[in-house]
Length: 415
Image (cartoon, rainbow, N blue to C red; front, side):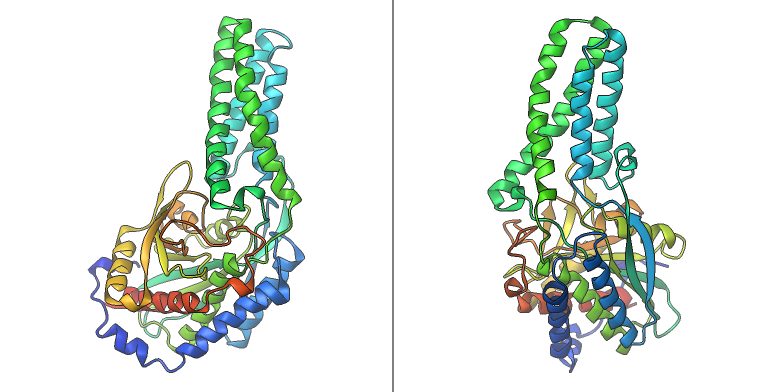
């Protein structure tokens, strides 16, 4: 159902068609009002909290008022992005404590424990279930979604997704320098866990006391990482005006426009998801439930798209331990729009730190593209910080991103 957009002709005179749209300014105002309601009236929307549920109820109400027959999907989710890593590091340190207790037997036990925590931490960073997740509590959350039929017989489906929940405000996100230190500490944590596995395999065989002494060095580094992963859950949630009331708002306003101007050949599914901030549980649950219906769909994720002076920006790659690459044909199409519509100020970038729901589309084999308005210097404004508030939203960037996405939808739809 998904022809390659690179093989499709762009629509004629896209700029003229856009400029003839009488309701563009009104829709931009609607998007800004959605951002205001989510970030001010509801406020911080931590994953699995009652405020996140209130945001989902708001999205449902907007879609219902439009007559789009919204649906709500319930699922269970982890409650913290940081707790799985804190538990993994704690278990790795437990391996250090166990290793010297009873010779080869506890050396082997420590090896198994260290290897399990290393694997769990890697899988967690790649948004995949793992043994550490099994040990942590889950709570209910929800996705809100609607289907907007094509005007004619559809030849493809497309998913627009933007999450409703917000993150906490960790110390490591306070400044760009802190983020650089954070990236080093993440690498150090994985290197330390790997070192423990290698050392304890050797120790299980050689039974040399020096091996345990050497292992205390990576153990000391892991203590620093443990502090880094425990501190965030002691901080308040951000109001999340940019991350991600902005992306959720554009999903809602594009749904409004698509109701009035459905795409000719493309059925569009709009999703306001829950629990992105703790491991993309909402996007994972949604694609799991609709795997067959969406197996050939385009997947467009919107996350943090109203930072000041930055964007529209579409990312070509994301991920910290393995690369998740956006669909080359969609990137090429976005590049063409950026060239054709220079007044929108769009550009591409790479996101080497963190993840988005676009990675879930990529993991499911869908042609995916994510919009995250990184500045040209790769900084994401107000990311997981207390100052991610409505007053710091750039209404012009929000409007230009919405215009760029509408153009993208038109060109995907065009034959």
